[in-house]
Image 1: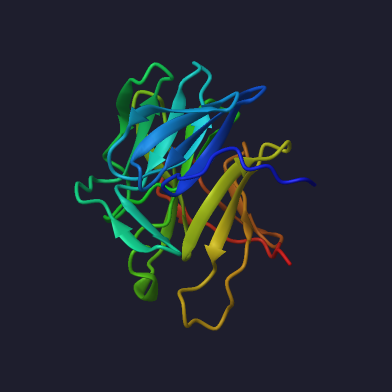
Image 2 (image 1 turned 120 degrees about the horizontal axis):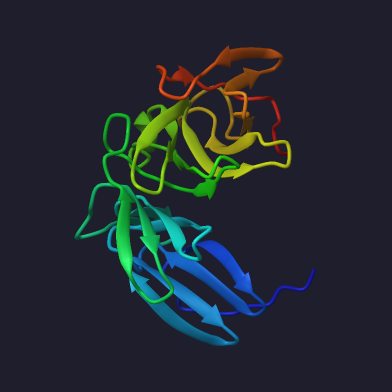
Length: 228
C-alpha cells in the first residue's frame, strides 16, 4: 500500500473521520481542536479546549469527540494542557459550534475519555482509561455510554488501558486494550477484545456475567484475542 502524507505540522493528530472523497476531519490533542483536511487544504474547524482525542460522526452530521481533559504522552514527552478541564464528551459541528454532551462521567476521577462510537441502539459508547497520566499506578478503566442529551451510565470496568472501541457486524462491542496490566506487571501489553452484546451480556472465554442497563455494573472480561 502506498503511503501519502496529507498534512504536516499537526499537534498530535487523532480520531480521523472520513466525510467523503478527499475530506477528512480529525482531532489534535495538543492543538486542542478539531481540524479538517479537504482536497489539499487544511483548516481548523473548532477549538475544543482540553485534549480532543477520539472522534466519530453522528447521525445528525456533527462530530462527537472524546475529550480527555488535556493530556498526551508521546515522542515529544508528556503534555498537560495549561487550561486542563474535566474529561467529557463533546459535540462539534463543521460550522465550528462546540457543546458538551456529557461532563459528569461515572467512575472515580480523573475521567479520560479516549475513543467513542455509536451503537446499534443509537447510544454513544466511549472508553475511559482513567488515570493514564500515572502509568505506574494505572487503575481500572471504564466503558460508558451516553444518550445525546447527556444521560450517562457505566457499562463495564476493564483492567488497565481500554483504548479503541467499535461495534462489529454481530452487534458486539469490541474494545482494544493498549495495556492489559500496568507497566511492570507480569503480562505484556497486548490488544485484547472485550464485547458487549445487544442481549446485555459481557462474556469471557465461554463464561458470561450479565449486565442490564440501569443495574449495578459488572467487571468486563477480556477475550483472549491477542494481536500478534
